[in-house]
Amino acid sequence: MSASSYDARFKVWRGDPGGGGLEDFKVEVNEGEVVLDIVHRLQATQVPDLAVRWNCKAGKCGSCSAEINGRPRLMCMTRMSVFERDEVITVTPLRAFPVVRDLVTDVGFNYTKARDVPAFVPPAGVGPGEYRMQQADVDRSQEFRKCIECFLCQDTCHVVRDHEENKGAFAGPRFLMRVAELDMHPLDAAAESGLDRKRAAQEEHGLGYCNITKCCTEVCPEGIKITDNALIPLKERAVDRKYDPLVWLGNKIRRRGE
Amino acid sequence: MATGTEPQPKSGTAPGGGVRDGTRAAIAAAHLRTDRWWLAPAATAAGLLAFVVYSTWRAFANADYYQAPYVSPFYSPCLADNCEPMRSGPNWEIFGSWWGLSPALLVLIFPLGFRLTCYYYRKAYYRGFWASPPACAVAEPHKKYTGETRFPLVLQNIHRYFFYAAVPVAGILTYDTVLAFRDEHYEWGHMGLGTLVFLVNIVLIWAYTLSCHSCRHIVGGKLKHFSRHPVRYRMWQWVGKLNARHMLLAWASLVSVALCDLYVYLLASSAFDDPRLF
Image (cartoon, rainbow over all chains, first blue to last red; front, side, top):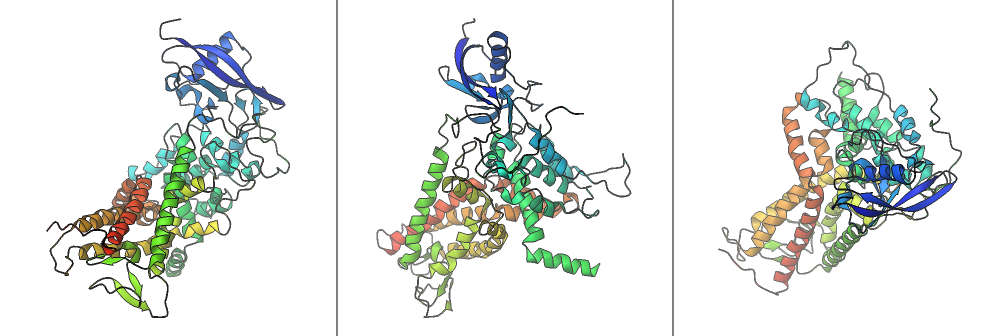
């Protein structure tokens, strides 16, 4: 053990759908380590059967999502140096999704919701390789493309975290952001094919459930301004469709003139 | 390919099944946060409550809101017959002598509605007063949640109309600030400490109003192709810069408008005289 090393106290949730609880561990911590390093050391030295999902250790694959001291975070991006040495650090699986075992949860809810969002609709008369877009037109969508699908935003969103019964009606911030991304895409031809993404966001993906309390933005490890740049603009676009008689009237007149 | 992790259809889930739902990790605690997560919602609730108490008192007081050349922003424009006469001021007797209540009530509905439906204040009071949620990853106490899908919260969608109303109100407060460049005898070309207070307030009011998310949408956010609308794109970028500070501007302008009113109240109730700069 080097001079800068110390023993940290951890509480790690262990169990399966049948039950479980927090177990205490004392484990060595070295300078520069992150929580995922400590979980790996636990596996290597004390509990070889501890289940944990991880992959890149660089904050880019979105696999090692967990809750550390009650806050949804990536284990590989949470430095041990942010904690006091005498602090007890609690690590649990994501609490919005069904647990599989130990720190691993079933995030299948998100894949179902991903399938519910209609894909990009290619514009008519433009072949592959012929897409041309101005940078100004794709800036907004590109921010959302930084998403690594760690599902921390889905986990922290109280609409489904605190209300299991809302999972059917609400897509969650990650997939409402996907709807916004496609609706802002300069070449998406959904409207021409009869698909109104703005209306669908409200009526099929549960945009109205979002009460813009910004937890999704707070936990996003990519720093995407989910609420300000995706959800609120999408809400305003839905208002254009459903609650703004001036816009409705303008569209009527324009259509009559065509 | 079957991986064994496909979502299984669940039969009817009872409302209220949150973090303690049967399928989730068995943890009895509503949250495991160890930081002072309660501080932000508590401070927000205290700040908003203080403003509500102060503004309610001042709005119903119907007194001490004008001391030449300053008019309290709570009473401007003054639209009733029972308004104090303000020379060149924004007082129009649209409501006759039958209106017996404070004239502030006729006007405050617009800024109140603007702030009540504001995307920032919604976050603030949903968290601070309604605990929905109290903080991130802290379980909320409510059994059911329908968000803004039903009456009355579906009315939050009319925010842009309050924005439309807030613009002329800010315009009138700008006019009041211009009038503040007079002295107590209505001579132009003078400044007092009150003029500075009014100037700071009107800058913050405009910054807050223009940083509104609905404004950002209207000026350019609704467009699909920014490249075809360079002027609106530039305006959207400007509003976006302000919008990133919407919370800060919401608080700063709330405090400044209350301080502006308090300043006029202190002058009108003869607590002190306006220090004249020139």
